[in-house]
Length: 435
View (cartoon, rainbow, N blue to C red):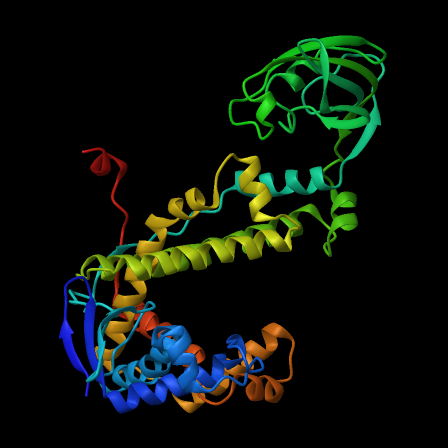
C-alpha cells in the first residue's frame, strides 16, 4: 500500500515497500534479462547460473533492472489508485535494500490546485475596426503591385523601389571574403535584403557605372569573422528596372477579378474587410475573456509544466519553419541564439498558456461540462474534412473517446460558455490609459 504525502509546489511523495521475496523475484527477472552479459570461467556466455553471477559480480550488478521491475508497476498502481495527475517524470529515492526487502520513495509533480475567481460575467473591451475608403484603396494598391511589371530604365539613376542587376564583390582589409561575391544579381532597392548601407550606396548610380560602397557588418551578423567588421564592395550596375503599375480602371478589374467594374470590386473588398474585422474582433474578445478569467484565478504553476510547454512551443515553431523549408537550428545560428536561449524566450507565453489551460480545465470540472457522443462525432467529421480523410477511417485511427479529442471538445465548449457569459464593454479612451 502506498503512503501519499503532499509536499510544497504541487509535489507528492509516494512511499512504497517491496518484501524480500518480491525483490528476489525482481533480481531473477533482471538476471534473465542480462544473463548474456556475464562471463565466468568454465561457462559459456549466457549460461552462467544465477548464484555464480551473484558470487562473482555481486548482487548489485542486477539492481538497476530489478529496481525498475519493482518500481514501475507499483508506481503506476499508486498513481491510478490515488488519482494523481502526474505532469513530469518522477524522481526515485531508494532508501534501503536489505534482508527485509526494499524501501523507496518517489517524488512526483502533479497538476496544481486552482482557486477560481470570477469567471461568469467578466467585462472585456470589444471593438470592431472601422473599414475606411483608405483601407479599401490600400488593398487595391496591393492588387496593382501584385500585377505590376518591370521596365528598363536608361535615362536616370537608380532610386528606391527599382530593381537593379549588379555584380558585386566584398573585401575585408583588402582581401575578398567567402560568400561576398555575386554576378547578375537581382536586388530590389529598399528591400533591406543586404546589410545596412549597401542598398543606399547603390541609389544614385547609373547603368554601366562601377563604384565602391563602404559598409560595416552588424554585430549580430551570422558569420563570426564579419561581425562588426568594416568592409568594402566593388559594384557594377548592368541594368535598372522600374516597377510599372497597371491603370486602376474597369479593364484592370476584369483582368484580376470576377467583377466588371471598379465600383463592384471596391464593394466586395469592403465587405470582405468588414467580415475580417468582425472575425478579428471576436477572436480578440475570446482571448481577452480567457485572459481575464485566468487573471481572476490563483494557481502556483510547477516549473516542470512550464518547461514542458516551452519544449512543445519550440517544436511547434520548428514544424512551422520546416514547412517553409527552414531549419530552426540554422535560423537560430544565423540570429546568434542558442536553442536554450530561444526556449527561455518562450517562457512568458508558456506560463500564460499553462495557466489558461489549467483554469479552463478547472472551470470545466466545476460546471461539469462534458463531450457528448454527438460532440465527438461532429469533431471527427470536422477533423476528417480538415485532413481530407474518410470520416470512418479517421474514427478507426483515433478510436472511440480519444482523450485528446474529448479534452479539446470540453475546452472549446467551456470557452464558448465563458464567451456567452462575458460582457462586452467599450475600450478605454486613450486619455484614460495615459492617466
